[in-house]
Amino acid sequence: MKKLCVFPGDGIGPEVMAEGLAVLKTIEQVAGKQMFTTESALLGGSSYDVHGVPMTDQAMALAESSDAVLLGAVGGPKWDALPFAVRPERALLALRKNLGLFANIRPAMVYAPLIDASPLRRELVEGIDIMVLRELTGGIYFGEPRGVSMIDGVETGINTEIYTRPEIERAARMAFELARKRRNHVTSVDKANVLESTELWRKVVSEVHAKEFPDVTLVHMLVDNCAMQLIRWPKQFDVIVTTNLFGDILTDEASMITGSIGMLPSASLGGKVGMYEPIHGSAPDIAGKGLANPLATILSVAMMLKYSFDMPGEAALIDSAVEKVLTGGWRTADIFREGPGVTKVGTVEMGEKVRQAILNSTR
Ligand code: NAD
Image (cartoon, rainbow, N blue to C red; front, side):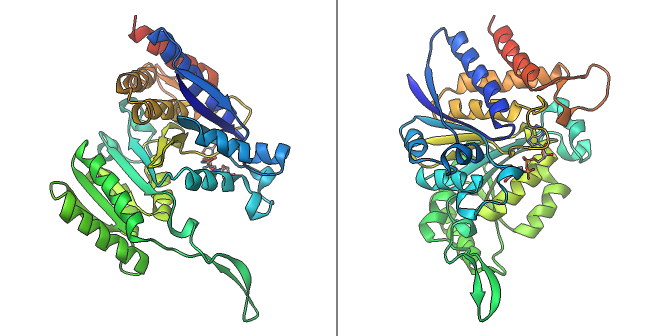
């Protein structure tokens, strides 16, 4: 029996998490046995409201003692004015850091029935399949010194971009290993012409490549060029490996190429316990309305089965059920375009369609 720590979070988090967990139940139903126990805890703004902190020590201990963590999303305007140290997003950073999750991997692929939901032309997006590895526990989001203070009588905000050789080496290694299971191509993205921290990034990635992965093709690309190339010709990319800040931005850009941020899952790996979450935020504009797309969370459950529990067959069952539901014309509002055979559904109905497709495919 595997123990899951579940953080539904804020906004649409609890709505999409309910569908993700229901799909997991269906996987157990198909297997004919219970395989998972779940324990939930508050995280983010909902934790702050009850406990005065975005994550309690007990919640952290629960995550650390579990076999995997499933997370919805945190944050929202209600908590935007809080001091930085207790903002909901701080819980995410602490979780990643404490669990040692140094690599966030995010697939960006286009489902054939959704090609027309992409803002890019069909011939640019058809068949794209990109995996972005974002370094997650280093760089400017954690570097010291940081803060806002008076320096020489001038109010000054400071953040520090910092990377060490071991941090770069482990991210590079994971990217090359991922590429070997895909199309054997890695694009390492940096700003080596301006930032010394990424000058080191480029040097270390090249060294890891030459010593351990000469069979994989490596291309270095400046981040501004990469932002442009993702729109100009996204099919050139297989695995992209980059820093925390650049990865944060590029993955949102890549998500839009695929049509909607509501479709993309992610896995944070590298520590003892993997963490799985949709890449979107808490979407306060649609929270509580039953409009959220639960597919990113459902696909995050599939990633969890694949990467934490070595259950590729069950993961594939979920992936293909999602594809079938989309082929059947079912769409939440974010991916809906008026057309023949296309039906708009809400969060719960979308979850039900996926569960039904899983059951149908195993009958
Ligand atoms: P967001 O991802 O929450 O929303 C951006 C847009 O995408 C919104 O229009 C939203 O309605 C839409 N959207 C997002 N997820 C969707 C889904 N599943 N289905 C349909 N539409 C969806 O980003 P934001 O508006 O910049 O941030 C809102 C809050 O979320 C902020 O407090 C932010 O800090 C937080 N946030 C949290 C995480 C996380 O928990 N990992 C990530 C990003 C942002």
